[in-house]
Amino acid sequence: MLTTESIQKIDREIAKYPADQKQSAVMAALAIAQEELGWLPSEAIESVADYLGIPPMAAYEVASFYNMYDLKPVGRHKLTVCTNLPCMLSGGVDAAEYLKKKLGIGFNETTPDGRFTLKEGECMGACGDAPVMLVNNRHMCASMLPEQIDKLLEELK
Ligand code: FES
Image (cartoon, rainbow, N blue to C red; front, side, top):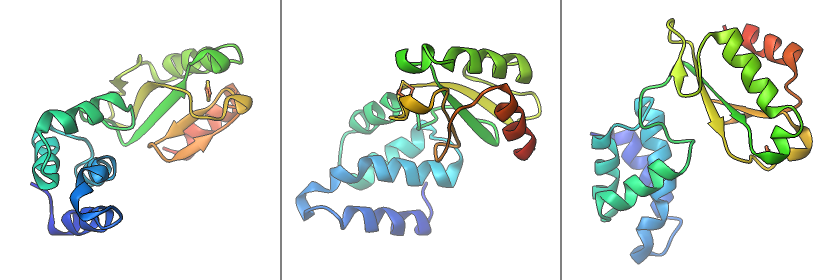
């Protein structure tokens, strides 16, 4: 199911670990599969497990635990807002509510035009910069007050 290019990338990750520990590359391998496919269908998770020589359930446990992995298709831009306690006390929930209203969707939903998916996230280690959000699992945005959120949404159009 994975392309040769993805397999080569996974091989590079496997090479970072001792030969008998290739299962340690499971997080990286899942991320590579997701990058290729846009999300992680169960066949992709099984392919990764198969390639690493681990039971499919072991890969599924990892994929379903971390919210950077998408087990369903997502929009072009995935916005993950931290609502854990420190952020909640510093505007994280307000930022999420603002986004819900602005985009017309709730958590785990995608706008009808397929542009945005909204997710609720766990602590991103940037509590002091709350409210914080991640764009497409990679780009961290801090101090996301309504004005900054408007600006970001405009940039992502
Ligand atoms: S609680 Fe939100 S970044 Fe830590």
